[in-house]
Image 1 (cartoon, one colour):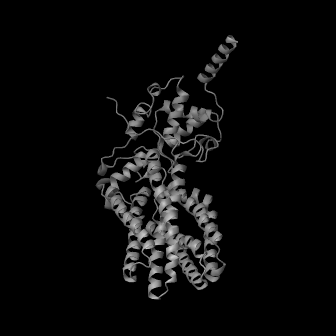
Image 2 (cartoon, one colour):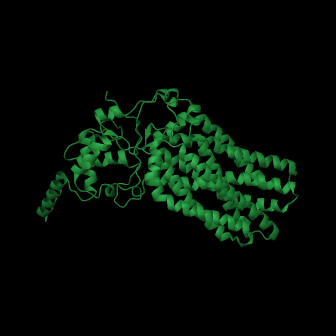
Image 3 (tube, rainbow, N blue to C red):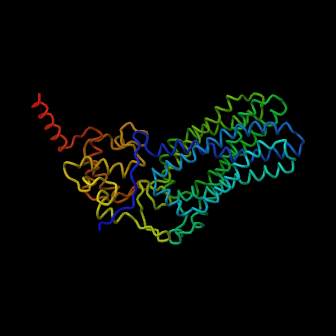
Length: 468
């Protein structure tokens, strides 16, 4: 029996690509989830301040903020969470499978703490003034610790997606070897810093509506200090974080991400620092609209580039530096019973070994070469590239200079990609006829008409004239 690749059906999203679908949902979710974790600490700190300084008016702010938080973080977060699971499962099934097989109990533990967190936020809002202060503070700090625990338990999975950190995991397959890698503590630090910064910005949306002048000034300054502390901690953590990246990630960051997003992130950093310094200095000048704009700016110009950069820097891998972005296994992982797909692809090709390729395309002919090239291109490239010239996700035609010469394109596929010489691109050891089919299809996107198609069009035209 012919050996087959353990792949899944291809999910292709025209124009924006699957990565943008995951990225858009993920950015909204991260903004909501990090706000919720930061807000949990804000609740605990302000509740402690309210009780110790006998300032019940602070509790009124917490109630208003808590009601806003239920909608902004917990409802939006609860909607986008399943959205992430759906989108990553269909876009990167092997990637999510690899993570589940490695971190299933870690994920289960995270969900336990998330359950406590959800109960906690309702308790924080609805029990204000209904229970004694001592009990309320215990609930507040339990809420804060449970919320942060969700981050502590999810960051190992995110760090492993960048790389395992050492070669030991490949032989042991141990969850601990994967979780506590070189990148973990720096990654946890930068996300913890961000949660404080974004909580300070979001908190201003409600603080700006407070009627009592003294309470408004006090809370606004507290939020500003929290935001500033988060920003400065983030700068320190970023320097540590970059030092823990693998070589391919550093190369992509230095040559592609920083030139593209460096000025945007720098400008946002400066604007955020100015915002927090100004609101600490002149708290009564804070307006709700300004706080909303600042929050949106952090999401659009900070979080979106940061999340997209992190996703890009993992390339050519989607997880563990053994699963390529296009879902193929790049190496053996004895600890997990994973066998590399590269030898089978090199020997028999993708068309003959992928269950979901139509039977009529398993063997390339002059008549089906263009269609086979389209299927191969989408299987091999669509997780990182748009096929359309005007696509949003690194479209292929412009990357080849809109070339309509199949031989030139095939020379690239035959050279660097076949031998895996580009550190941020998956190795593509396809048989020559499959590389030729891909080159033909990519050239057709820029206007090239394959001979078989030209003959077919001419025949169709002649038949149409005969009918007329």
